[in-house]
Length: 147
Ligand SMILES: [Zn+2]
Image (cartoon, rainbow, N blue to C red; front, side, top):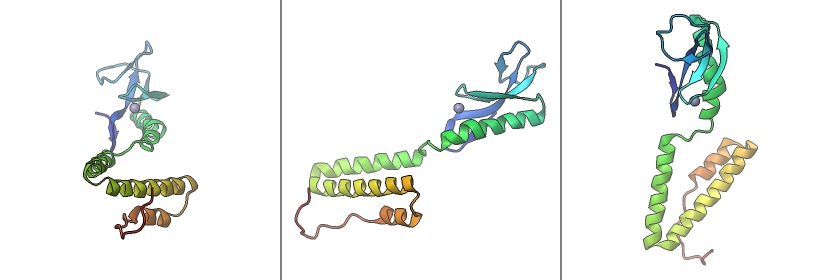
């Protein structure tokens, strides 16, 4: 049983054992081994560490620091992916019956995305990003159509 980070379920980190012939194994039954090697269930592996308990911990630490954390930084959480899919479906449904309303939602999302992307790229304040996030789609007040 290795180490798994939340939202990164396809990457299980552990200290593989380097056998005298150079092969790596995840089995604990290997009696003689030369080193622990940082390893991941996806096939990634890192450097060697002493064949001690501290070496095992160092291998798992290397896996987390050099492999798992960088991957986690680019992994979209499942609940976010599901929420986006739900929003897309709602907009698709809305577009069938009220295409102008769907266009307004898309305009709002596009504006929000542009502001949020800029804020992320420039390190702007979270306050501005939050304001953009919470801006609701304005109800139609009979103003001229914008395309
Ligand atoms: Zn991995």
